[in-house]
Length: 116
Image 1 (cartoon, rainbow, N blue to C red):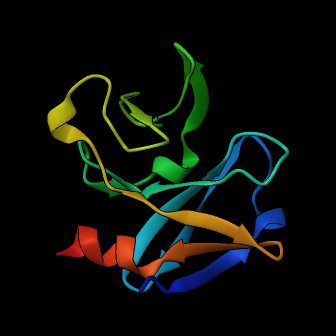
Image 2: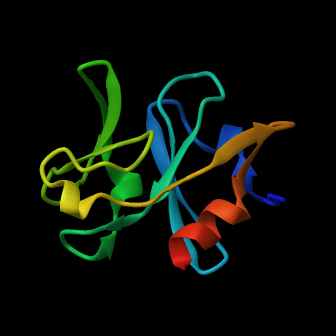
Image 3: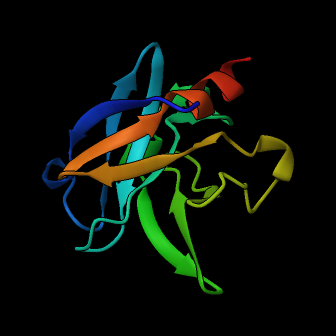
């Protein structure tokens, strides 16, 4: 059974932007592409530079999919699943996330699945 951890208010994330949140020991990048309550959650770690910066990346759309471009070397990661457009060997974890009563929650089961 999945448990959910509250990370922040949906209003803490401006439309078209991302923020970093701490979920246990994991840095999670939360993205809100539009003014609605659709939120995506990925690892905040850029796998090419091994630094926590993806939440500061630019959100864009390519061939009908939403992506975030790393602010460092500009690699693109798909918001739905963390797939890396330039090198699938550098894809990153994506987490189950939901908005409930105006708060962004992350599935602890999806966090544990990525941690091991």
